[in-house]
Length: 139
Image 1 (tube, rainbow, N blue to C red):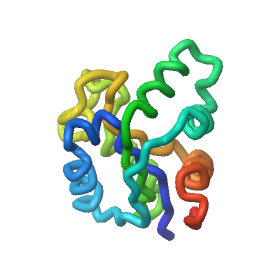
Image 2 (cartoon, one colour):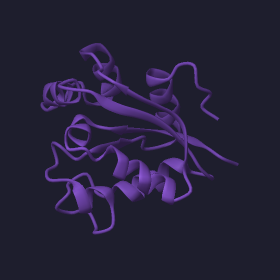
Image 3 (tube, one colour):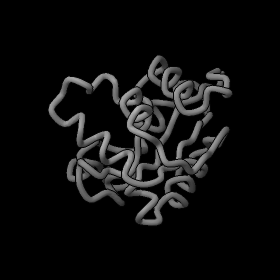
Image 4 (tube, rainbow, N blue to C red):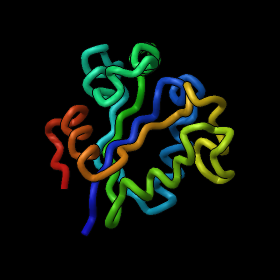
């Protein structure tokens, strides 16, 4: 069974011209793009996306970063547990701890600007896909 997940190429990835490389890596892994859109998100959508971090001291920084310039939102489809494949390809949140060969390990510079977001489970994938692509079926 094929599942879907949300991937965001964050503003730093767009600004640094790395979106094509990130998509190339996903497609090379035999993951398929279901939807792709370059968009500028507002603070309301950013707040909903980062809802689980609302009470944390870095919440404002997250919102400011993700809304500072356009990002590329994608729905990715693959085999079972697409979200876990994407997360492994992304690497650790802190690029200094991310393994070589991962997106963050090879391309990211710092934790605050780590290029990509990927849903961290089936439930978050469903919630995030509905936020960014309400017209797309989760399954």
